[in-house]
Length: 305
Length: 247
Image (cartoon, rainbow over all chains, first blue to last red; front, side, top):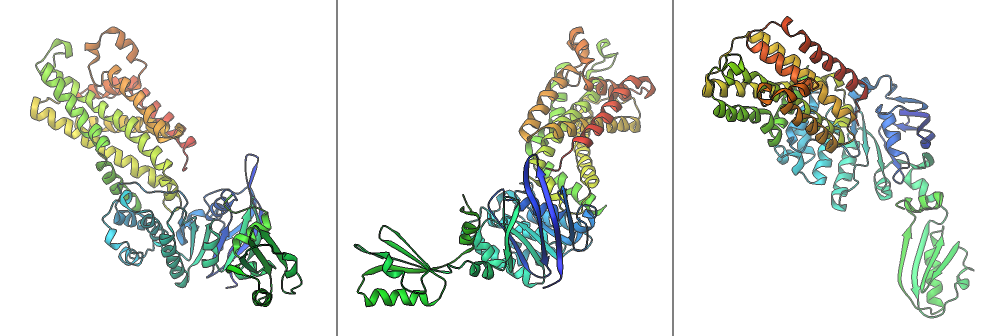
Protein backbone atom coordinates (compact mmCIF):
# COMPACT_ATOMS: atom_id res chain seq x y z
CA UNK A 1 0.00 0.00 0.00
CA UNK A 2 2.92 2.37 0.19
CA UNK A 3 4.08 2.51 -3.41
CA UNK A 4 2.62 5.54 -5.20
CA UNK A 5 0.95 4.65 -8.51
CA UNK A 6 -0.02 8.28 -9.06
CA UNK A 7 2.16 11.16 -7.92
CA UNK A 8 0.83 14.68 -8.36
CA UNK A 9 2.84 17.75 -7.46
CA UNK A 10 1.50 21.30 -7.66
CA UNK A 11 -1.13 20.67 -10.31
CA UNK A 12 -2.92 23.82 -11.50
CA UNK A 13 -5.42 24.45 -14.26
CA UNK A 14 -7.20 27.70 -15.03
CA UNK A 15 -10.12 28.29 -17.37
CA UNK A 16 -10.20 31.96 -18.22
CA UNK A 17 -10.15 33.60 -14.81
CA UNK A 18 -11.46 30.62 -12.88
CA UNK A 19 -8.90 28.48 -11.08
CA UNK A 20 -10.45 25.04 -11.62
CA UNK A 21 -7.55 23.28 -9.90
CA UNK A 22 -5.34 25.35 -7.64
CA UNK A 23 -1.90 23.96 -6.84
CA UNK A 24 -2.81 20.54 -5.51
CA UNK A 25 -0.44 17.71 -4.58
CA UNK A 26 -1.24 14.16 -3.52
CA UNK A 27 -0.34 10.53 -4.07
CA UNK A 28 -2.39 7.45 -4.76
CA UNK A 29 -1.01 4.12 -3.56
CA UNK A 30 -1.07 0.83 -5.36
CA UNK A 31 -4.06 -1.31 -4.44
CA UNK A 32 -6.20 1.30 -2.74
CA UNK A 33 -9.53 2.88 -3.56
CA UNK A 34 -8.83 6.58 -3.58
CA UNK A 35 -11.75 8.95 -3.63
CA UNK A 36 -12.02 12.59 -4.49
CA UNK A 37 -15.10 14.17 -2.99
CA UNK A 38 -16.51 17.60 -3.46
CA UNK A 39 -19.46 19.54 -4.84
CA UNK A 40 -20.05 20.04 -8.55
CA UNK A 41 -17.50 22.41 -10.01
CA UNK A 42 -14.96 21.77 -7.24
CA UNK A 43 -12.34 20.63 -9.76
CA UNK A 44 -12.71 16.83 -9.55
CA UNK A 45 -13.19 16.14 -13.24
CA UNK A 46 -10.47 18.57 -14.29
CA UNK A 47 -8.06 16.85 -11.90
CA UNK A 48 -8.95 13.35 -13.07
CA UNK A 49 -8.72 14.35 -16.75
CA UNK A 50 -5.29 15.90 -16.26
CA UNK A 51 -4.14 12.65 -14.63
CA UNK A 52 -5.58 10.60 -17.50
CA UNK A 53 -3.73 12.76 -20.02
CA UNK A 54 -6.94 14.06 -21.61
CA UNK A 55 -6.38 17.63 -20.48
CA UNK A 56 -3.27 19.77 -20.43
CA UNK A 57 -2.46 21.23 -17.00
CA UNK A 58 -1.14 24.79 -16.78
CA UNK A 59 1.58 23.61 -14.43
CA UNK A 60 2.52 20.71 -12.21
CA UNK A 61 4.46 17.49 -12.08
CA UNK A 62 2.42 14.41 -12.87
CA UNK A 63 3.54 10.80 -12.84
CA UNK A 64 1.04 8.01 -13.44
CA UNK A 65 2.36 4.43 -13.53
CA UNK A 66 5.75 6.07 -13.94
CA UNK A 67 4.63 7.90 -17.09
CA UNK A 68 4.02 11.53 -17.93
CA UNK A 69 0.30 11.63 -18.86
CA UNK A 70 0.77 14.45 -21.32
CA UNK A 71 3.84 13.32 -23.23
CA UNK A 72 3.28 9.58 -22.92
CA UNK A 73 -0.51 9.64 -23.11
CA UNK A 74 -0.93 6.94 -25.75
CA UNK A 75 1.27 4.56 -23.75
CA UNK A 76 -0.52 5.39 -20.52
CA UNK A 77 -3.96 4.82 -22.05
CA UNK A 78 -2.96 1.23 -22.79
CA UNK A 79 -2.62 0.36 -19.13
CA UNK A 80 -5.37 2.43 -17.50
CA UNK A 81 -9.13 2.09 -17.62
CA UNK A 82 -11.30 5.17 -17.89
CA UNK A 83 -14.96 5.69 -17.17
CA UNK A 84 -16.06 9.22 -17.95
CA UNK A 85 -18.71 11.51 -16.72
CA UNK A 86 -21.31 12.34 -19.39
CA UNK A 87 -19.97 10.05 -22.04
CA UNK A 88 -22.34 7.99 -24.14
CA UNK A 89 -22.23 5.42 -26.88
CA UNK A 90 -24.29 5.47 -30.09
CA UNK A 91 -27.89 4.43 -29.32
CA UNK A 92 -27.89 1.74 -31.96
CA UNK A 93 -24.68 -0.03 -31.00
CA UNK A 94 -25.23 -3.45 -29.43
CA UNK A 95 -23.60 -4.36 -26.13
CA UNK A 96 -21.38 -7.06 -27.64
CA UNK A 97 -20.41 -4.76 -30.52
CA UNK A 98 -19.27 -2.07 -28.11
CA UNK A 99 -17.17 -4.57 -26.15
CA UNK A 100 -15.78 -6.10 -29.33
CA UNK A 101 -14.96 -2.67 -30.77
CA UNK A 102 -13.20 -1.40 -27.66
CA UNK A 103 -11.28 -4.70 -27.41
CA UNK A 104 -9.78 -3.96 -30.80
CA UNK A 105 -8.20 -0.75 -29.46
CA UNK A 106 -5.88 -2.70 -27.13
CA UNK A 107 -3.16 -5.31 -27.60
CA UNK A 108 -4.04 -7.24 -24.47
CA UNK A 109 -7.68 -7.75 -23.51
CA UNK A 110 -9.95 -9.76 -21.25
CA UNK A 111 -12.33 -12.26 -22.87
CA UNK A 112 -15.52 -10.34 -23.23
CA UNK A 113 -17.76 -13.25 -22.34
CA UNK A 114 -16.36 -13.50 -18.81
CA UNK A 115 -16.39 -9.72 -18.48
CA UNK A 116 -20.07 -9.51 -19.46
CA UNK A 117 -20.91 -12.38 -17.13
CA UNK A 118 -19.14 -10.72 -14.26
CA UNK A 119 -21.04 -7.50 -14.77
CA UNK A 120 -24.37 -9.22 -15.27
CA UNK A 121 -24.65 -8.05 -18.86
CA UNK A 122 -24.31 -11.34 -20.70
CA UNK A 123 -28.07 -11.65 -21.17
CA UNK A 124 -28.08 -8.13 -22.58
CA UNK A 125 -25.27 -8.67 -25.08
CA UNK A 126 -27.60 -8.34 -28.09
CA UNK A 127 -29.41 -5.21 -26.82
CA UNK A 128 -28.98 -1.75 -28.22
CA UNK A 129 -27.15 0.67 -25.94
CA UNK A 130 -30.09 3.09 -26.16
CA UNK A 131 -32.43 0.46 -24.68
CA UNK A 132 -30.34 -0.18 -21.54
CA UNK A 133 -31.33 1.18 -18.12
CA UNK A 134 -29.10 3.73 -16.39
CA UNK A 135 -27.55 1.03 -14.20
CA UNK A 136 -26.91 -1.26 -17.15
CA UNK A 137 -25.27 1.56 -19.10
CA UNK A 138 -22.98 2.27 -16.17
CA UNK A 139 -22.11 -1.42 -15.89
CA UNK A 140 -21.27 -1.45 -19.59
CA UNK A 141 -19.01 1.58 -19.08
CA UNK A 142 -17.29 -0.27 -16.24
CA UNK A 143 -16.87 -3.27 -18.57
CA UNK A 144 -15.31 -1.00 -21.21
CA UNK A 145 -12.95 0.50 -18.65
CA UNK A 146 -11.82 -3.01 -17.60
CA UNK A 147 -11.44 -4.46 -21.07
CA UNK A 148 -7.66 -4.03 -21.19
CA UNK A 149 -7.27 -5.55 -17.70
CA UNK A 150 -5.81 -2.27 -16.41
CA UNK A 151 -3.80 -1.84 -13.23
CA UNK A 152 -5.42 1.49 -12.54
CA UNK A 153 -9.08 2.37 -13.10
CA UNK A 154 -10.57 5.87 -13.12
CA UNK A 155 -14.26 6.20 -12.35
CA UNK A 156 -15.60 9.73 -12.71
CA UNK A 157 -18.98 10.31 -11.05
CA UNK A 158 -19.92 6.72 -11.75
CA UNK A 159 -23.11 6.59 -9.72
CA UNK A 160 -24.50 10.05 -10.42
CA UNK A 161 -28.10 9.75 -11.53
CA UNK A 162 -28.51 6.13 -10.42
CA UNK A 163 -31.24 5.10 -8.01
CA UNK A 164 -30.07 3.94 -4.55
CA UNK A 165 -30.52 0.25 -5.42
CA UNK A 166 -28.38 0.48 -8.58
CA UNK A 167 -25.85 2.57 -6.66
CA UNK A 168 -25.41 -0.13 -4.03
CA UNK A 169 -24.97 -2.81 -6.70
CA UNK A 170 -22.32 -0.63 -8.33
CA UNK A 171 -20.51 -0.25 -5.01
CA UNK A 172 -20.30 -4.03 -4.61
CA UNK A 173 -18.90 -4.21 -8.11
CA UNK A 174 -16.24 -1.59 -7.41
CA UNK A 175 -15.20 -3.45 -4.25
CA UNK A 176 -14.87 -6.72 -6.15
CA UNK A 177 -12.75 -5.02 -8.82
CA UNK A 178 -10.52 -3.61 -6.12
CA UNK A 179 -10.22 -7.04 -4.51
CA UNK A 180 -8.76 -8.32 -7.77
CA UNK A 181 -5.82 -6.03 -7.12
CA UNK A 182 -6.77 -3.02 -9.21
CA UNK A 183 -6.13 0.45 -7.92
CA UNK A 184 -9.22 2.65 -8.19
CA UNK A 185 -9.39 6.42 -8.40
CA UNK A 186 -12.95 7.64 -8.16
CA UNK A 187 -14.68 10.96 -7.88
CA UNK A 188 -18.09 11.47 -6.38
CA UNK A 189 -20.22 14.09 -4.79
CA UNK A 190 -21.86 11.51 -2.56
CA UNK A 191 -20.13 11.50 0.82
CA UNK A 192 -21.79 8.21 1.69
CA UNK A 193 -20.19 6.63 -1.37
CA UNK A 194 -16.74 7.85 -0.42
CA UNK A 195 -17.22 6.64 3.15
CA UNK A 196 -18.37 3.19 2.09
CA UNK A 197 -15.83 2.55 -0.64
CA UNK A 198 -12.66 4.50 -0.14
CA UNK A 199 -9.49 3.64 1.70
CA UNK A 200 -8.53 7.29 1.54
CA UNK A 201 -10.52 10.37 0.66
CA UNK A 202 -9.44 13.77 -0.59
CA UNK A 203 -12.00 16.47 0.03
CA UNK A 204 -11.78 19.11 -2.67
CA UNK A 205 -13.44 22.50 -2.79
CA UNK A 206 -12.77 25.46 -5.08
CA UNK A 207 -9.87 23.62 -6.69
CA UNK A 208 -8.03 22.94 -3.44
CA UNK A 209 -7.67 19.80 -1.36
CA UNK A 210 -8.91 20.81 2.07
CA UNK A 211 -8.50 17.41 3.75
CA UNK A 212 -6.99 14.05 2.84
CA UNK A 213 -7.10 10.94 5.00
CA UNK A 214 -8.95 7.71 5.69
CA UNK A 215 -12.69 8.26 6.23
CA UNK A 216 -12.29 6.99 9.83
CA UNK A 217 -9.49 9.42 10.58
CA UNK A 218 -11.35 12.30 8.96
CA UNK A 219 -14.50 11.67 10.97
CA UNK A 220 -12.69 11.17 14.28
CA UNK A 221 -10.74 14.38 13.78
CA UNK A 222 -13.88 16.31 14.26
CA UNK A 223 -14.25 16.40 18.00
CA UNK A 224 -18.02 16.19 18.19
CA UNK A 225 -18.05 12.61 17.16
CA UNK A 226 -21.31 11.51 18.73
CA UNK A 227 -24.58 13.25 18.50
CA UNK A 228 -27.62 12.48 20.63
CA UNK A 229 -30.98 13.82 19.58
CA UNK A 230 -34.23 13.65 21.53
CA UNK A 231 -37.46 15.51 22.12
CA UNK A 232 -38.65 16.87 25.44
CA UNK A 233 -42.02 18.35 26.23
CA UNK A 234 -42.59 21.54 28.15
CA UNK A 235 -39.95 23.86 29.52
CA UNK A 236 -36.48 22.46 29.59
CA UNK A 237 -33.37 24.36 30.54
CA UNK A 238 -30.51 22.98 28.51
CA UNK A 239 -27.97 24.51 30.90
CA UNK A 240 -28.57 21.74 33.41
CA UNK A 241 -26.92 19.32 30.98
CA UNK A 242 -23.80 21.44 30.65
CA UNK A 243 -22.45 20.20 33.98
CA UNK A 244 -22.01 16.74 32.54
CA UNK A 245 -18.31 16.26 31.69
CA UNK A 246 -18.75 14.29 28.50
CA UNK A 247 -20.97 16.94 26.88
CA UNK A 248 -19.26 19.43 24.60
CA UNK A 249 -22.21 21.32 23.18
CA UNK A 250 -26.00 21.51 23.35
CA UNK A 251 -28.49 22.97 20.90
CA UNK A 252 -32.22 23.42 21.30
CA UNK A 253 -34.65 24.03 18.49
CA UNK A 254 -38.25 23.93 19.66
CA UNK A 255 -38.65 20.68 21.53
CA UNK A 256 -35.67 19.08 19.84
CA UNK A 257 -32.48 18.84 21.84
CA UNK A 258 -29.18 17.96 20.16
CA UNK A 259 -26.28 17.06 22.42
CA UNK A 260 -22.76 16.79 21.06
CA UNK A 261 -19.90 14.96 22.75
CA UNK A 262 -16.72 13.25 21.74
CA UNK A 263 -16.72 10.63 24.46
CA UNK A 264 -18.67 7.40 24.16
CA UNK A 265 -19.85 7.84 27.76
CA UNK A 266 -21.88 10.85 26.71
CA UNK A 267 -24.93 8.89 25.57
CA UNK A 268 -25.05 6.86 28.79
CA UNK A 269 -24.50 9.96 30.94
CA UNK A 270 -27.34 11.86 29.29
CA UNK A 271 -29.81 8.98 29.44
CA UNK A 272 -28.97 8.38 33.11
CA UNK A 273 -29.41 12.06 33.83
CA UNK A 274 -32.81 12.17 32.11
CA UNK A 275 -34.02 9.06 33.99
CA UNK A 276 -32.68 10.16 37.37
CA UNK A 277 -34.33 13.57 37.06
CA UNK A 278 -37.65 12.19 35.81
CA UNK A 279 -37.49 14.10 32.57
CA UNK A 280 -39.85 12.74 29.89
CA UNK A 281 -38.12 12.30 26.58
CA UNK A 282 -39.05 10.74 23.23
CA UNK A 283 -37.61 9.90 19.78
CA UNK A 284 -34.11 9.44 21.18
CA UNK A 285 -31.50 8.63 18.57
CA UNK A 286 -27.75 8.86 18.07
CA UNK A 287 -25.85 9.93 14.99
CA UNK A 288 -22.26 9.39 13.94
CA UNK A 289 -20.31 12.12 12.30
CA UNK A 290 -20.28 11.66 8.54
CA UNK A 291 -18.12 13.12 5.82
CA UNK A 292 -21.03 15.48 5.17
CA UNK A 293 -20.45 16.94 8.61
CA UNK A 294 -16.75 17.26 7.91
CA UNK A 295 -17.39 19.02 4.66
CA UNK A 296 -19.80 21.36 6.41
CA UNK A 297 -17.30 21.99 9.17
CA UNK A 298 -14.36 22.57 6.81
CA UNK A 299 -16.11 24.76 4.25
CA UNK A 300 -19.04 26.15 6.18
CA UNK A 301 -21.44 24.95 3.50
CA UNK A 302 -23.50 21.90 2.58
CA UNK A 303 -21.96 19.73 -0.10
CA UNK A 304 -25.04 19.73 -2.30
CA UNK A 305 -25.72 23.43 -2.02
CA UNK B 1 -5.19 -1.92 -38.41
CA UNK B 2 -7.40 -4.22 -36.34
CA UNK B 3 -9.16 -1.24 -34.73
CA UNK B 4 -9.50 0.53 -38.08
CA UNK B 5 -11.25 -2.50 -39.54
CA UNK B 6 -13.54 -3.12 -36.56
CA UNK B 7 -14.47 0.54 -36.30
CA UNK B 8 -15.32 0.62 -40.01
CA UNK B 9 -17.54 -2.46 -39.59
CA UNK B 10 -19.32 -1.02 -36.55
CA UNK B 11 -19.75 2.43 -38.10
CA UNK B 12 -21.18 0.82 -41.25
CA UNK B 13 -23.66 -1.19 -39.20
CA UNK B 14 -24.68 1.95 -37.30
CA UNK B 15 -25.16 3.78 -40.60
CA UNK B 16 -27.33 1.00 -41.96
CA UNK B 17 -29.45 1.09 -38.79
CA UNK B 18 -30.28 4.77 -39.28
CA UNK B 19 -33.32 4.80 -41.61
CA UNK B 20 -33.20 8.47 -42.62
CA UNK B 21 -29.49 8.48 -43.49
CA UNK B 22 -29.99 5.22 -45.32
CA UNK B 23 -32.86 6.63 -47.36
CA UNK B 24 -30.96 9.72 -48.45
CA UNK B 25 -27.78 7.82 -49.26
CA UNK B 26 -29.07 4.75 -50.98
CA UNK B 27 -32.59 5.44 -52.23
CA UNK B 28 -32.94 9.18 -52.80
CA UNK B 29 -30.81 9.45 -55.97
CA UNK B 30 -32.15 6.24 -57.58
CA UNK B 31 -35.71 7.45 -56.90
CA UNK B 32 -35.02 10.81 -58.55
CA UNK B 33 -33.43 8.99 -61.46
CA UNK B 34 -36.58 6.86 -61.80
CA UNK B 35 -38.86 9.88 -61.54
CA UNK B 36 -37.11 11.97 -64.18
CA UNK B 37 -36.40 8.87 -66.23
CA UNK B 38 -40.10 8.17 -66.56
CA UNK B 39 -40.79 11.83 -67.40
CA UNK B 40 -38.04 12.38 -69.98
CA UNK B 41 -37.33 8.81 -71.15
CA UNK B 42 -33.91 7.90 -72.50
CA UNK B 43 -34.29 8.75 -76.19
CA UNK B 44 -31.29 10.62 -77.69
CA UNK B 45 -31.97 14.35 -77.72
CA UNK B 46 -29.93 17.31 -79.08
CA UNK B 47 -30.64 18.90 -75.72
CA UNK B 48 -28.27 16.45 -74.01
CA UNK B 49 -25.60 16.32 -76.73
CA UNK B 50 -27.47 13.70 -78.74
CA UNK B 51 -27.59 11.40 -75.72
CA UNK B 52 -30.58 10.15 -73.80
CA UNK B 53 -31.53 11.93 -70.55
CA UNK B 54 -30.43 9.00 -68.37
CA UNK B 55 -27.19 8.44 -70.31
CA UNK B 56 -26.22 12.07 -69.75
CA UNK B 57 -27.69 12.67 -66.29
CA UNK B 58 -26.92 9.48 -64.35
CA UNK B 59 -23.39 10.62 -63.39
CA UNK B 60 -24.88 13.89 -62.06
CA UNK B 61 -26.87 11.79 -59.61
CA UNK B 62 -23.56 10.44 -58.35
CA UNK B 63 -22.91 14.01 -57.28
CA UNK B 64 -26.30 13.96 -55.55
CA UNK B 65 -25.19 10.95 -53.50
CA UNK B 66 -21.89 12.68 -52.70
CA UNK B 67 -23.58 15.85 -51.46
CA UNK B 68 -26.11 14.01 -49.28
CA UNK B 69 -23.40 11.93 -47.59
CA UNK B 70 -20.87 14.76 -47.41
CA UNK B 71 -23.05 17.62 -46.23
CA UNK B 72 -25.73 15.74 -44.32
CA UNK B 73 -24.40 12.44 -42.94
CA UNK B 74 -20.84 13.57 -42.17
CA UNK B 75 -21.61 16.76 -40.20
CA UNK B 76 -24.63 15.37 -38.34
CA UNK B 77 -22.96 12.12 -37.29
CA UNK B 78 -19.65 13.78 -36.37
CA UNK B 79 -21.25 16.58 -34.36
CA UNK B 80 -23.53 14.07 -32.64
CA UNK B 81 -20.61 11.82 -31.71
CA UNK B 82 -18.91 14.82 -30.20
CA UNK B 83 -22.02 16.12 -28.44
CA UNK B 84 -22.77 12.75 -26.82
CA UNK B 85 -19.18 12.35 -25.63
CA UNK B 86 -18.59 9.37 -27.94
CA UNK B 87 -15.52 11.04 -29.46
CA UNK B 88 -14.19 11.77 -26.01
CA UNK B 89 -14.76 8.16 -24.99
CA UNK B 90 -12.72 7.02 -28.00
CA UNK B 91 -10.08 9.59 -27.14
CA UNK B 92 -9.66 7.96 -23.72
CA UNK B 93 -8.42 4.75 -25.38
CA UNK B 94 -5.21 4.17 -27.36
CA UNK B 95 -7.24 4.47 -30.61
CA UNK B 96 -5.42 6.98 -32.79
CA UNK B 97 -7.31 9.98 -34.18
CA UNK B 98 -6.15 8.98 -37.65
CA UNK B 99 -7.76 5.53 -37.30
CA UNK B 100 -11.00 7.11 -36.14
CA UNK B 101 -11.06 9.48 -39.08
CA UNK B 102 -10.11 6.86 -41.67
CA UNK B 103 -12.68 4.38 -40.35
CA UNK B 104 -15.39 7.02 -40.68
CA UNK B 105 -14.27 8.15 -44.12
CA UNK B 106 -14.19 4.51 -45.30
CA UNK B 107 -17.69 4.04 -43.94
CA UNK B 108 -19.06 7.12 -45.68
CA UNK B 109 -17.31 6.10 -48.85
CA UNK B 110 -18.73 2.56 -48.74
CA UNK B 111 -22.22 3.98 -48.20
CA UNK B 112 -21.85 6.45 -51.06
CA UNK B 113 -20.54 3.64 -53.26
CA UNK B 114 -23.59 1.51 -52.44
CA UNK B 115 -25.75 4.50 -53.43
CA UNK B 116 -23.92 4.80 -56.74
CA UNK B 117 -24.17 1.07 -57.45
CA UNK B 118 -27.93 1.28 -56.78
CA UNK B 119 -28.09 4.19 -59.19
CA UNK B 120 -26.28 2.23 -61.86
CA UNK B 121 -28.49 -0.83 -61.36
CA UNK B 122 -31.66 1.26 -61.66
CA UNK B 123 -30.25 2.94 -64.77
CA UNK B 124 -29.30 -0.39 -66.33
CA UNK B 125 -32.46 -2.29 -65.45
CA UNK B 126 -35.05 0.38 -66.26
CA UNK B 127 -33.37 2.49 -68.94
CA UNK B 128 -30.50 0.40 -70.32
CA UNK B 129 -28.07 3.23 -69.59
CA UNK B 130 -25.02 3.59 -71.87
CA UNK B 131 -21.54 4.06 -70.45
CA UNK B 132 -18.88 5.44 -72.76
CA UNK B 133 -16.10 6.14 -70.27
CA UNK B 134 -13.45 4.20 -68.38
CA UNK B 135 -14.52 2.52 -65.15
CA UNK B 136 -11.30 3.37 -63.30
CA UNK B 137 -11.34 6.96 -64.43
CA UNK B 138 -14.94 7.40 -63.22
CA UNK B 139 -14.19 5.60 -59.95
CA UNK B 140 -11.14 7.76 -59.31
CA UNK B 141 -13.14 10.88 -60.14
CA UNK B 142 -15.89 9.74 -57.79
CA UNK B 143 -13.38 9.11 -54.97
CA UNK B 144 -11.72 12.49 -55.21
CA UNK B 145 -15.07 14.30 -55.47
CA UNK B 146 -16.45 12.36 -52.49
CA UNK B 147 -13.37 13.09 -50.35
CA UNK B 148 -13.63 16.75 -51.22
CA UNK B 149 -17.23 16.97 -49.98
CA UNK B 150 -16.49 14.82 -46.92
CA UNK B 151 -13.82 17.35 -45.98
CA UNK B 152 -16.45 20.07 -46.42
CA UNK B 153 -18.73 18.08 -44.10
CA UNK B 154 -16.03 17.74 -41.43
CA UNK B 155 -15.49 21.46 -41.66
CA UNK B 156 -19.20 22.06 -40.95
CA UNK B 157 -19.02 19.63 -38.01
CA UNK B 158 -15.98 21.40 -36.57
CA UNK B 159 -17.50 24.87 -36.62
CA UNK B 160 -20.99 23.87 -35.46
CA UNK B 161 -21.53 24.20 -31.72
CA UNK B 162 -24.21 21.48 -31.62
CA UNK B 163 -25.43 18.62 -33.81
CA UNK B 164 -28.67 20.56 -34.39
CA UNK B 165 -26.70 23.41 -35.89
CA UNK B 166 -24.61 20.99 -37.95
CA UNK B 167 -27.78 19.43 -39.29
CA UNK B 168 -29.32 22.78 -40.23
CA UNK B 169 -26.14 24.13 -41.82
CA UNK B 170 -25.69 20.90 -43.77
CA UNK B 171 -29.27 20.95 -45.08
CA UNK B 172 -29.31 24.64 -45.85
CA UNK B 173 -26.19 24.15 -47.97
CA UNK B 174 -27.08 20.77 -49.47
CA UNK B 175 -30.57 21.33 -50.84
CA UNK B 176 -29.98 24.54 -52.82
CA UNK B 177 -26.73 23.04 -54.09
CA UNK B 178 -28.54 19.98 -55.39
CA UNK B 179 -30.96 22.05 -57.44
CA UNK B 180 -28.66 24.86 -58.57
CA UNK B 181 -25.68 22.75 -59.66
CA UNK B 182 -27.37 20.46 -62.15
CA UNK B 183 -27.09 17.52 -59.76
CA UNK B 184 -30.84 16.97 -59.50
CA UNK B 185 -32.09 18.66 -62.69
CA UNK B 186 -29.81 19.30 -65.71
CA UNK B 187 -28.63 22.90 -66.02
CA UNK B 188 -29.68 22.80 -69.70
CA UNK B 189 -33.29 22.58 -68.51
CA UNK B 190 -32.96 25.34 -65.91
CA UNK B 191 -31.86 28.22 -68.16
CA UNK B 192 -29.19 30.93 -68.18
CA UNK B 193 -29.97 32.56 -64.83
CA UNK B 194 -29.48 29.36 -62.86
CA UNK B 195 -26.41 28.59 -64.95
CA UNK B 196 -24.86 31.89 -63.85
CA UNK B 197 -25.57 31.14 -60.20
CA UNK B 198 -24.25 27.60 -60.58
CA UNK B 199 -20.73 28.91 -61.24
CA UNK B 200 -20.52 29.84 -57.56
CA UNK B 201 -21.57 26.43 -56.35
CA UNK B 202 -18.78 23.88 -55.80
CA UNK B 203 -21.06 20.95 -56.60
CA UNK B 204 -21.46 22.24 -60.16
CA UNK B 205 -17.84 21.33 -60.82
CA UNK B 206 -18.33 17.83 -59.46
CA UNK B 207 -21.38 17.37 -61.71
CA UNK B 208 -19.52 18.58 -64.79
CA UNK B 209 -16.44 16.51 -63.94
CA UNK B 210 -18.32 13.25 -63.43
CA UNK B 211 -20.56 13.81 -66.46
CA UNK B 212 -17.43 14.36 -68.54
CA UNK B 213 -15.64 11.25 -67.26
CA UNK B 214 -18.83 9.23 -67.83
CA UNK B 215 -18.81 9.98 -71.55
CA UNK B 216 -15.08 9.29 -71.82
CA UNK B 217 -13.51 12.76 -71.48
CA UNK B 218 -9.93 12.93 -70.24
CA UNK B 219 -9.04 14.43 -66.82
CA UNK B 220 -7.07 17.12 -68.66
CA UNK B 221 -10.24 18.38 -70.34
CA UNK B 222 -11.64 19.06 -66.84
CA UNK B 223 -8.67 20.79 -65.22
CA UNK B 224 -10.79 23.71 -64.02
CA UNK B 225 -13.22 21.34 -62.29
CA UNK B 226 -10.30 19.48 -60.74
CA UNK B 227 -8.75 22.69 -59.39
CA UNK B 228 -12.03 23.55 -57.64
CA UNK B 229 -12.54 20.02 -56.27
CA UNK B 230 -8.96 19.59 -55.04
CA UNK B 231 -8.97 23.14 -53.68
CA UNK B 232 -12.07 22.34 -51.64
CA UNK B 233 -10.46 19.10 -50.47
CA UNK B 234 -7.29 20.83 -49.29
CA UNK B 235 -9.09 23.77 -47.69
CA UNK B 236 -11.64 21.53 -45.97
CA UNK B 237 -8.96 19.19 -44.65
CA UNK B 238 -6.74 21.95 -43.31
CA UNK B 239 -9.54 23.93 -41.68
CA UNK B 240 -11.15 20.90 -40.08
CA UNK B 241 -7.79 19.59 -38.88
CA UNK B 242 -7.18 22.92 -37.14
CA UNK B 243 -10.67 23.35 -35.73
CA UNK B 244 -11.37 19.70 -34.86
CA UNK B 245 -12.31 19.10 -31.22
CA UNK B 246 -12.77 15.84 -29.31
CA UNK B 247 -15.38 17.42 -27.06
